[in-house]
Length: 366
Image 1: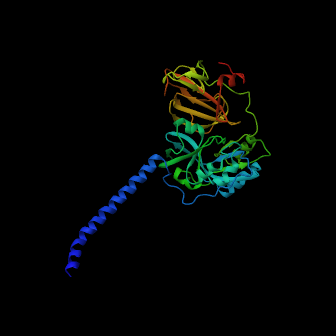
Image 2: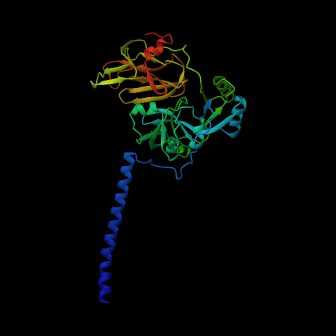
Image 3: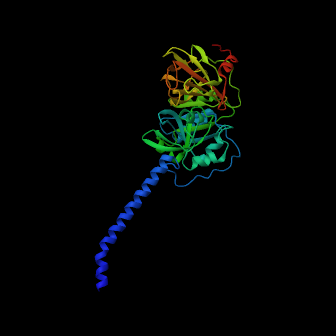
């Protein structure tokens, strides 16, 4: 009995020690989880089960991207298919979201199905879609470049409420205006309602004509045509700003860092506040802050061509289609800059080309 009494007297101390150990263990677990978030080793809210992503066997060309502010009903989807004569359709989620502080269009998709609808040359690798299926975001190259984001970086996106999402892969989507793609199970977290987007395959008709029919059928929706297998037009290009070329394309000594570096575009000296024009018909892929440029606008055009406009003081467009010659921004002195000017780039399949030569080939001279 004496032994039992001693054991009973020591029981409160034993229970206290156990409680301390449990609390300490909980703190360690919480601290470890926070570290993983900061380092971007995993998304904050991964889907519970990964989607099976089958190898790509055949493509369904998406000729129209429809985005609605409210979910499309079954009747509306049938109406769009009927008026355009679409051979196939795919419902997705779609919305304008903020990546850090810049705005772009994001799609919520089933990776196993959606990859067949992406243009040739877009994220051919199966691991890209496995990355999306497990909860990561596939971000367009130009959006990643704007923030100098390495793969695995957690990005704060803001739609309805802040959300941290990991950049799992970069992809030149070639779908006009689409800067990010996530699994449909993360769509609600990013503020996207299911069924607000629709892809239509209309191979027998010119995409622009199909887009006009869709807009007439459902006024108020956004319809972006996707062009395939056509070289970008040589007519219709304009100079991005009225000014003189102060720094050419190619290797140069960086004016701020004083190191030899490749200049992926040209600098055009112009007064502060002068209008910056869209070089060609296109759609806004990204508009917002960018490291080194202060602010930038990126437009996507048919033929897998993108144009970049940097160091701007004010952004005049955030989303949707733009026309050649439309003011999209104002000249500034933002970012790494020694005076008011515009940094302009032309990229084909995400590879930079000399804008001066590109524009001269299309009848534009500074």
